[in-house]
Image 1 (cartoon, rainbow, N blue to C red):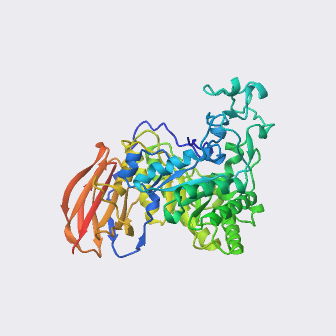
Image 2 (cartoon, one colour):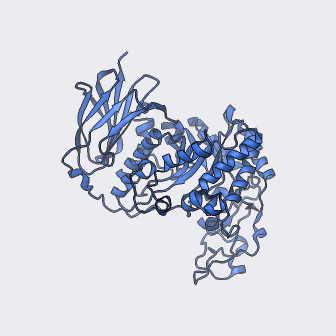
Image 3 (cartoon, rainbow, N blue to C red):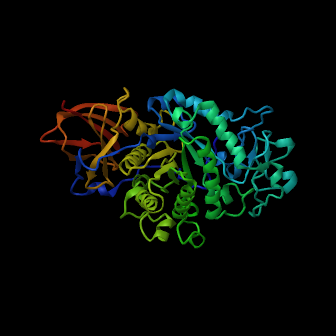
Length: 528
């Protein structure tokens, strides 16, 4: 089981009603333009990844490109015992209750499960100083040692005792006085055995084995999620040094595998303490040091500059605007302290890309964990996710994994279908991004791409407002058959993407109405 990361910003779950977007009353509807020969670049299929636990049938339907095994529950994973410790996410409970655990079983099972959909795997390698000690259930704050606590686990009682949450009734935190009682020291030799096991079982990355290895999970938050063993926030010098050691282990065993790091989040992971980081933000320092380490070793040790992303919102309008924090250099949403530190909008993707270009050129940018889901199975969940996937492709993100695996019937699952199987017959959004602009992307966004398999121009248009928008879509530099295939997912029917047949173009322009709260796939066949 992978446990929810409590260090991440919590996504508000109480979106009760779909609020009205005042922008819909603008006198002029947004206009759309796509230029099929401008700003061309490949879209990485790995941006459509999801975390472990996604329905295998859905994974096959959307041709899931990669699946991630990670999260807080992977940080203290002991592969020899196939068990971890859930940390602050769940009463600091470790073990799996198995008398005869099978080495690496849960990771092997994930890899084998999703091979049916040709999914590659992203596996987390613990770099934290301690990992779980026993397959027998254990916990860090048993009440028979530390006394009464604020909350007690109601289900698991190792050796007849209760497991507390490590907080006294007065709110003060309890310190773990005997870390060795349920943890053992982590080491490069232990993780070497893990990677060797994965290669021996599944092959190298080049031969269909694990393609991506992640250097732990949100180390900047260990003093929160793993505070029993790491009560003091580690410096980024420590985090980087650990990352270097374990990256070398991975690369020495499988030189064809890709390494991701630091896989961190917000202030503690992106910024930390510049005074101790060569006057650099944490992410910049990490890239600088990894570049120097790679140079010393004579080979690349870090392939992806990887971070996590959880925008904060409390209503549908904010949810649908939140994607702008990834790319818009003019947009501040006011809820990120990082905006105050940067003295500028977040604009995470161009920001991270500029860090990469300055400190470790050639490193790719990824978001191995993110969520923009309200948890309430709303149409806006699907629209926000569809917008996010469009942004990832347009902004040249190399890999991304949605944290909460959706059920096949959830609205957010249809966001993936819009890009991976919009007609139920396997048809996909294009794999070469082209220039696509909206005069008001906050209300009506558009993403365009050419599909290499047949040369078709595919577009996803997202109406983020509560009213239909009638407007023109102009197509430049594309010889089409003159008619567009239309597929729409909207609040009118949350159970399927509906085919709208074909609609004619007039002088390379499609004029049509996009329903309120909807995502529309527009497909133009190329004249042969």
